[in-house]
Image 1 (tube, rainbow, N blue to C red):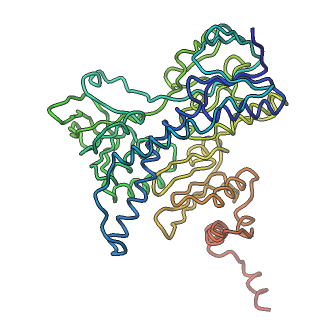
Image 2 (image 1 turned 30 degrees about the vertical axis):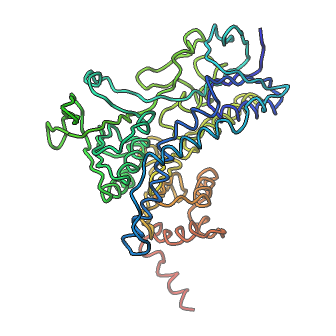
Image 3 (image 1 turned 135 degrees about the vertical axis):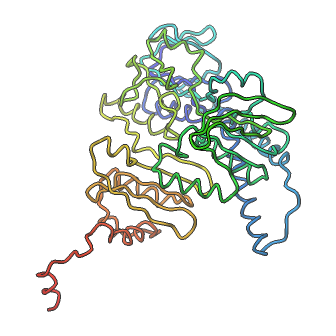
Amino acid sequence: MKKADLVILGGGIRGLYIATVASQLNLTSLFIEKASYLKHSLEHNTHQYISFATHFLFLADTAIRLGLIKPLTTFNLQHLKSQISTVIEYLQHSRDPLEFQNQKLEIYFGTGKFINSTTFQISDKLIQAKRFILSSHSRPIIPPLPCLETIPYYTRESICEVPYLPEHLIILGSTAIGLEIAQAYRRLGSQVTILNYHDSLLPEIDPNISKELQTIFMYEGIQFHMGIMVKGCKKIGHHIILDCVSKLQGEIEIIGNTLVITTGEMPNIGSLQLNRAGVNYNNSQHKIASNSYCQTSNKRIYAIGHSRDDSVLDGLEYQASLILINLLLPASKQFSKENMPVILNTDPGLIHIGLTQEHAKQQGLEPQLICYSLASKGEVNLLLHQEIIVGATLLGEPNNSFITELLFAIQTKITLSQLATKSTIYPTLSTIMKELNPYLYPPKPFNTFSQRLSTF
């Protein structure tokens, strides 16, 4: 039986990174992945590669309308997908993962399962470990609609395999993935309609930012049906018809020819047999129950990434670093979702850090929301509590310096005034802070005595 200090299950290239760092900390580590350590990580984001390419197509179209360049020839979607596949294939074989192996790190490929709380089996090998980290990949959640068995539909895993450009794309669910796909295919020329159960485009983001993003999407020609529930669906000829109930319009029909389901993601952990290891899985929320230290109901097993919480769009490395610190210094670091940025790769991009208004109120704070419109499309939202920034949302062109400073301000509880006087290489943030400062003070900040003093 093989023995180890730590076993990392899944996670692709980021799981391998975690295992490598653990081995450098002198922990005997094993990394177990189902297939190529890069394959799923790369293919999971294929829709983002198309979205990135269509951003340049959109800029070219704008330049054509302004008369800056000549009209382009017909855009070849198949050529773009072929190029993406070629790059993915090249990257998969660009480096042998076994090169990362050393005296403290071993790598295995294949599927496995838990035997008990401390033992994992892969093929005919038994591995006993002191700790496990679950960092499995995710797969799309398919809503329980019986009619879906009778009509063709796609997910973020399969939409990029469609050999033609859909005439009318219906996207069920306004998740981050759904919005990225919607904008990309609209810019390619498809008619796009988004159906969302919630009244807000992104319920986890402050309402005014969510509304601004929806307005930008509508300007590009994307249609929305908010507060809508799908009751049934059918296929007639080349058309897909969804029977829906809308809060505003009552019973309506949505007609298109291609259906994409992006209602959420769930961890791909079906074959692990977590019940044998004493790990509780929340079926209704599609995640593994875990505490603030990322520990599951079995304290020896940790869950990060999609395994822990579907709403976290990034930050696997952050969660893993906390686990590694806690392995060396038990119970020294707790997970804080507010320290992790929520990222949306649309145009304009969206990044949220810290608390939202709703979360701040739940914590007993009295938040003050300040909005700043950017010169280009988008805006900045700052959420303050007693002049300390507790949350921030940027809808606009990504700026790493800007986001890094905001994250630092939230973590260190710097006041808005202190941030306004801070000198930076890229002065975007400090300029905004200076312009926002008047919002923090009453219309008449000086009393009669101070006004008299100012005359001397």
